Amino acid sequence: MDVSAKEKSTKRRKEKLKYLAALAAGCVNGLFGGGGGMLVVPLLTGMGLDAKKAHATAVAVILPLCFISALIYVVKGCFDMTLTLTVGGGVVAGGVLGALLLKKADNFLLSGLFYLVMIGAGIKMVIGR
Image 1 (spheres, helix red, strand yellow):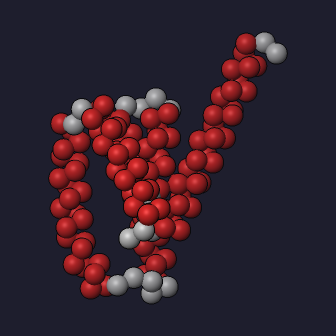
Image 2 (cartoon, rainbow, N blue to C red; image 1 turned 180 degrees about the vertical axis):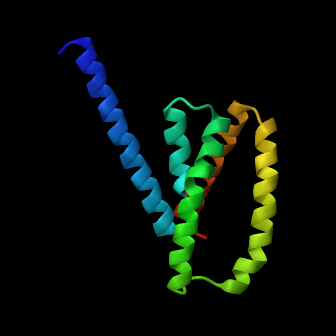
Image 3 (spheres, rainbow, N blue to C red; image 1 turned 120 degrees about the vertical axis):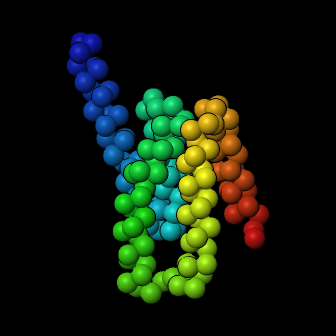
């Protein structure tokens, strides 16, 4: 196999993996009500984006998915409206603050904090509530 054919094969394989990872992120987000971004960020950094762009792009990618998942949950009656309204304001304020902080964050620190949060969440889930 010549170099050109090998490069094309590698590129096709990477494209397939990208789509499979995106499908997995969508499934995780729909199944668990969130968390798709936790898969999308490492996918994007693995594709060469720096941490800031990966986090911002993940939010842009996950946003429509969250709307669709939320719509399905609303139609099926699988949510608590009072809690949604109560927590929603804080989530929006935190999202705005986080987006503003992202501009100032160091890529290395951002990546480290991201993975610490992921590890901490995983440990909490394993050892219980």
